Amino acid sequence: MSPSPSVPSTTPAPAGGESVAKQLFLGNILEEALFPYPQIRARDRELLGPVTDAIDEFLAPRHAELAHYDRIAEQPADFIQALRDMGLFGLIIPETYGGMDLSNGAYARVLAQTSSHDSSVSLTIGAHSSIGMKGLLLFGTDEQKRRYLPRLATGEMIAAFCLTEAGAGSDAASIRTHATRNADGSWVLSGEKIWITNGGIADFYTVFARTDTPEGKITAFLVEAKWPGVSHGQHEDKMGIRASSTTTVAFADVRVPPENVLGPVGKGFKVAMSILNSGRTGLGGGAVGGMRTLIRLACAQAKERKQFGKSIAEFGLVRAKIAQMTLECFAAESVVWMVAHLIDSGATDYSVEAAMSKVFASRAVQRCAYEALQIAAGNGFMRELPYEQITRDTRILSIFEGTNEILHLYIALSGLKGVGAGLTELRAAVGDIFNDPIKGFGVLGGYTGKRLREATGYGIDRIARELSPRLRKAAGIYEKYTVELSKAADQLLRRYGKRIADQQHAQNRLADVAIDLFVGLCVLSRADSLERAGNPAAAEAVALAATFARQARRRMARSLRELDRNEDEAIEQLAGTVLAHDGYLWDVI
Image: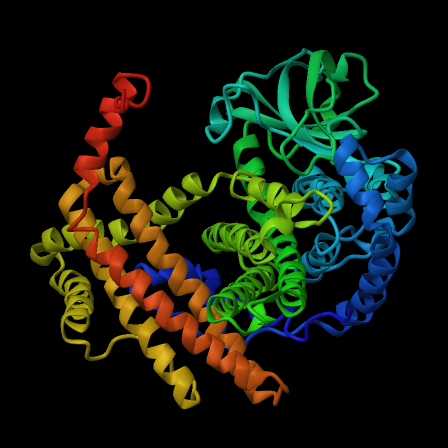
């Protein structure tokens, strides 16, 4: 299977390192960061063809085995060895240390290919690369890299990421695993981590512990599984991704040498968040690969199944499902590889974009799995067909690497922070009018101009790129709702002030608007580039982009309308009543 012609590579990063997504909250579209849609670098293109072909040749004949591994909840040692032999543990490790040195975009494309066959395979590879040893790549010293990366590249050492604890899931800052510094600079590490992917097969752990040092509260450590005091629990019996190893990992007075501190002492929370932000493209790539398989299965099923004397592929409701699955796959692919490009091109602020791509792709693949199973009807519910396993496997994606609920709040609050900074600057400017009138009126003039543009529509941030008529109309939707997002953010901050942090319903709606804007702009850019390149399927991509824009407009309009007119108070009261009674209150008897 050949790689997509529109996978990103290195092209100029956003001007000044600004976040494209955060600027949307300020009413700005950073066109130079989005257009043209990035293309894959030549080196990655040369590597991806053979790598994806090899993955297909290895996994396609083993679908029955992969289903069996799901049943027994284990990947046999010889299977993992085969993954090593294919070089799949060294995908993003530099060539200097024996790896393939793939870009983030190319790496996500590889996980799309493995996920088109089996999610547990992607998870074993992805937990190793995306998070398990990603901290070493991002924050490791030269000595640490020389010591570990060659063995991680070959798979001699498999990596795992140890952050989550029983009382610290989304609230990672509340971890209780602790490390105490000794006089000689070494550390004594104790505690237990839960739900660790690769926990039972890993030789190398990136561990986060509370240190409460003058430098900060949390520190990251590189820990080897063979050290005294390190152990792991039994394989967890999971709903999905059953073949991948998930266990507890315990540390009982483990001595960690000073040279195995990862990053600065006390700055472990920053290390953890950087790893998770950087690793989300792998998850998104896997979601896209799953959707492509589901679309292929749905097409075959719809054509083969006959009802009322004709193929169900002729029925409008079935066709609508397949079209929507395709639309959301194209959109997810567009945003996932745009974010990968931003990372590869050296952008420093991409955490909100990464969160958006994860939220959108995880929701899209779950809807796609649901609809593909529905098209298969009763057959889809049977274990001998792949639908039920794919449905189970994809369910974790909205929980993994930051729940979608937490990421919604993160997206909204990150965007609002920039808007709030503008309001603070405005208040300061009022005082400066009397001390420094030029400076004071300069700031006020900028702010007033922004509000005037929003009120009149004159001078709002237009996409200057010359677009075909259908794409120009779609662009107009995003231009309009970028302004509406900015206005809504400003109004919410004025209404609630610091209390905005407690307004989760409003934050959720604001995040949904921002996600639709960013994803839609990525779709627009990709369709435009395909059209300019004369791609054989460009006309279909343009039509798809126009359809996505219309759907996004309806969703955004509803979310913005519900900021003022909603049932939030009634919903809160109902939840309070049910919680007070520990369940449902009514019965028919």
